[in-house]
Structure formats: structure tokens, C-alpha cells
Image (tube, rainbow, N blue to C red; front, side, top):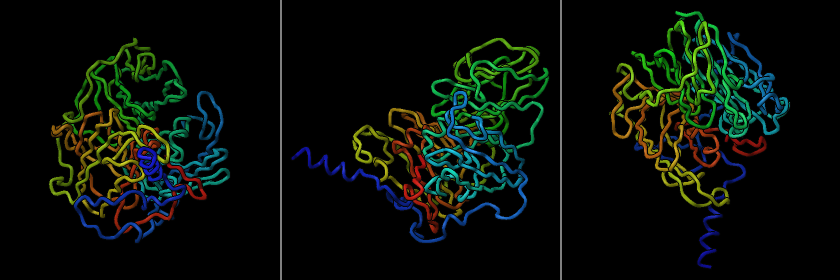
Length: 457
């Protein structure tokens, strides 16, 4: 009895309701700020849409299917990755998702694009999953130029892995643009859906901008060999004062990086992970090469400039401590991720008010690295392991936090709603490493579970 009674208690208290509102999970953490406008009252985030009227500048229909096509198990318009969506800054984008045969339902999340909350595409939080035979229309203004991607946020640990994703670029196409969407299907790593070495014909002297997207669950070492290159953008934000490097770049899961170089006469390669997976760029096939051991450190890379806010005067200060412990999650025994010592769903809900300057310390002592992704916002890195950032402002939406690392970040709460804040190693999120950033005065009408069987992770 001395053993069974405590075990029974922990088992019972770990159960996650079959249906619940995201605003009801865990406990509210106000970060030392005002606790007004409790999450059960206020404006519905369903009203936080993009423009409802106006002719779209970019209009796309994406048909999601559960089908075996090449290496993929899911497709969008018959391919994986799905079609490139191209827009320019200021364009009104309209995307219609049609679910033809994805049994669990599907959504589209615009990873890294700070869309209005109702357009964010998270099942059970900002919309219901689109069932077989259903459709959903997303409309948003493509304000920020950069490299992004879209993917399903319904049973995402399965659907993204299987192929329900694609690239989106907000910028005019240039003669030297090269797109490299990296994904692993059933253990086979690909660039743009193809295995092995590939070629892109560009004349020597062309300034190439290589847009690299890591759609996998783990960090990826990438870089250009054959010539020095610059890191010109990170997670869709331009780097100030980039300088040439001959190093590797550690690209977080879900992250993006734009690399720029002048194509040499002997060509150059984008190397992703191993020398066997490479993209030859130039007038001739360049020789194979491995990436250097040293990596670019964004903490000191580039030239410093103002960030438009003073983090020292933060209105809210939060801690996001990632750990791991033995216990129960939804009645299942195991070794589970924790946030501030709590297992899901008894985790902190980070509460902010519109206009707040927010400062957050992310500490990881879990034994594994975690690419942390905050929806709807870009944050600037202030420090790593108490070493202050001195380079270009490092704006990010997907931050790799290694084991025994501590980052301090800051952002302005300027995009109201309920926003996922989770690990983008998607199995980790499914194992409880997810919570929400929530604005006071707003609530969501959607339910995790429920009639739509919403399962965001």
C-alpha cells in the first residue's frame, strides 16, 4: 500500500483530459507584471485574422494527401516538399488548404512568419484541424522579407516527418537564388526531396544567395565550401555587417539561414550534414569537401546596432527551465520533459500584455539539446551562458539551446493572441515540451481534442 497509493496518485494526477482549452492548462505566470484580464474572459482570438477583403497578390491552393510518393508518406499538390510559395513584402497572401485524404486532419502553420493569431494554423489553439473533405483559407500580409516554411501543426510529429511541409520565400527572385529545403524521410536525408549530390548551374561571378531550411528534428551543420561566404540572414532577419567566413553553420531544427557568396570559377558546394549530401553551385561541378570543424558564433558575428527597445526595462521577466524526470505523462510511465519542474499539462502559461517588453531566461539541464520555437514573434538573443551578445542583433524564432546552456532573450509583445512556445524537435513536443505565450484580455474558442480531434503535436 505504501508503494501503490503514491503511484496511483501520481498516475491519476498525470492524466490529460480528452478535451481541454489551451487557456485552462497549467498555471498562469505573469512574470512580475500585472495580472489583469484573466484568460477566461476577453476577445476571442478568432477575431485576430488577416485582411478579410481585398484581392490577394498571391493565391495558392494546396491539396494535402496521405499517399506514398517517392520517399514521402504525405504530399501537398502531389509533391514533398510542397510547392514553393513566392511573395514580396507587402503582398496579400491567400492560401487554401484542401484535405483530400489525411485521416488525422491537417493545418498549415507559417513557421517564422509573424502572422495574425487566427492565421497561425495550430490545431486546437487557433483553428480546428481540417478534416478529410474540408478546406480552410489563410489570409495574411507578407510584411517581412525572408526565408520561411510552412507545415502541418496537427499530429505534427508524424505529418511533418512524413512530408506535409514546403518552403515560402518573401522576396523577389534573384538570378543567384538557390533554395535548399533539407528533410529526412525514413532515414534518408534529402535536399529539395532528392538524395545524393545535385547541381545548380550558375555562371562564375554570380552573387549566390543560398536559402537553407532545416525541416528535420535535429540541428544540422551546413555551409559553403570552395569559397568564403557570408551569413546574411537568420530566421528571416537580415544580419548587420556580415563578414566572410570559412566555417560551418549550426542550423537549428526548424531554423533557416541565408548564405551568400560570389560563385568562383571552380564552383562551390552547399554541404548539409555530410559530404555525401551536397549541392554543387557554379559553372562546373566543384570537388567534394567536408565542412570545417569550427562553427559561426552568432553571439559575436556581424556589427552591433540598436534593437529598438531596452531589455533592462522589461515589463515581464520569465524563466523557462527545461529538465527531465521519471514519472507519468497522461498515465504512461517514462522519462519525461519538464518545464520549471512541472510535467505537461501542469506547466506555466506565460502571460503578457500588448506592448510589454518581455525578457526570458531559457535554461536547459535535460541532457539533450532543444530547438525552442516561439510562434508569432522574433526574439533577440541577449546572452549565452552569461556572455553578452556583441555582434549583429541575433533575431531568431527557433533557438538551439544545448544541454547545460542558458540563453537570455527579449522581445516586444506586439502580436496579440495565444501562441505556442515549444521544442521543434517535434517528438519532444509530443512528449510534453510545449506551453503557450498568452496575452491578457484574449481567449480561444478552440479545444484540444474535441469533435475535431485536434492534436497540435
